[in-house]
Length: 179
Image (cartoon, rainbow, N blue to C red):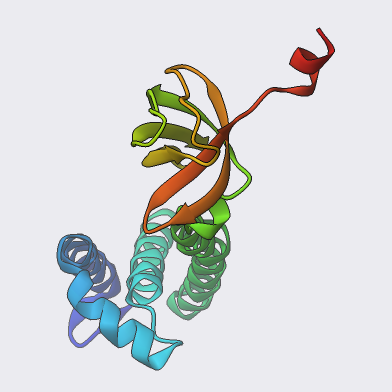
């Protein structure tokens, strides 16, 4: 079949190359278009470029490898592109967008957490405590809640957080209290 005086295979291949190049450029410079995607809500350039790439790739392969009618190939290519685009959105893009938000912590969320002193906390001074989390380690300045010195390597419980400083108290696990 010919379209606009060119074989349909050439059109599919040209569309594949162009959509592939635009996809690479979008990966490199996509932050500019992110504002457009957020403003409209439904317009996601990643999904549109992926659809065009999937459509042209499957159309090209089906034209080359099968003796099917070109109109049937267009229909099958659209179905393949919609299916792959949906899978990309559900299993890759949506989890990635929610994963970015889960790495954030608030100072209020640190209350009640257990940490380890990495710089000893003097009686009326400041030391440093590290708290392990899913997104990595959080090191914060710390002061003693009870005005007691806390040696390096001790386990501490975060009692309060004020102005970015953790107020901590020495922590003993239940097993240590029994011994």
